[in-house]
Image (cartoon, rainbow, N blue to C red; front, side, top):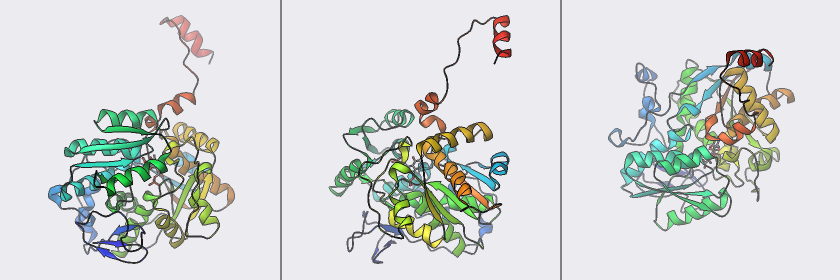
Length: 398
Ligand code: AN7
């Protein structure tokens, strides 16, 4: 069953529907499961470990064994900031971002619905992931990308997996509007996160964090927010495990946006549930260069219900956090993902995060997604002859 989050209207699972026919609001999949957590014991560590909570039949599952990502305790960085820090490394998914979780469910659902073509608009990672899963399922894939603004690793993936890649003159929000219109015309099955099945995959990040912590909640989960699907999905997952009695406490959901693309932070600061879109969003973190997040209402509710927080970070803070995480803990992430670490640093300084809080930062995509930003942050290597004397002299002079 699918349900409208505003008016409560319900729809059958086999409806191809993205927003409520009655009021236009966004939808969610109702998940009503009664199992004991012991059923998860001894299962392989992928997101399908929690298959009872997934809205697809086992026989239709399209998977690349996504999920089960590293959960790294970061002692050095944590000590520096005075918190217990764990980092959930979503760049370790098959195509290098958390989007794979959503696409596994979304593409499985597409097969159940019998569609021929799938599509999305994307700042990059959604398209890379969709292209791979569509290839695996044998479906046509059409992706609309904001021209000139997609990081090269992601663009290469979308093209290499055989998607029809169209560069749209405009930003992500305009590309999303266009692809949504195509979906409503029946040209393709839309797999942006407005599709509630996508979020059913992504909610497993919440499940895994609780499982990773020995069936306990962290005090706080911090993550970057763009189109706002992920924070909404993770909160949904956490609430489901809480309702199932698998955990006692709940985490404060803390969303971080780039200063130049921060409609959710502005709404949070103004105590509003509605956002005012950023017309010309801009940030070095191109993944979250989004001005009118589709899941804003779910995200703001997640933040408020969980007594969480929303904060902005500057491009400078993002790039500096990206380097800090890479060089202190060995975890390489793309700029958008580093927003979670930059946000943590800022919230510690502001006193919003208490000393000794148990924090999980979600880093959403791999460093190599955006190779140009990584290369630009470094100096070119010096070229030297393969001569031991010259090399020794150079190394001792460093
Ligand atoms: C690395 O690929 O929107 O708040 O089109 O790639 O759920 O949108 C990507 C988003 C964070 C924000 N980190 O997640 C897309 C796209 C990375 C991302 C986000 C994205 P949402």
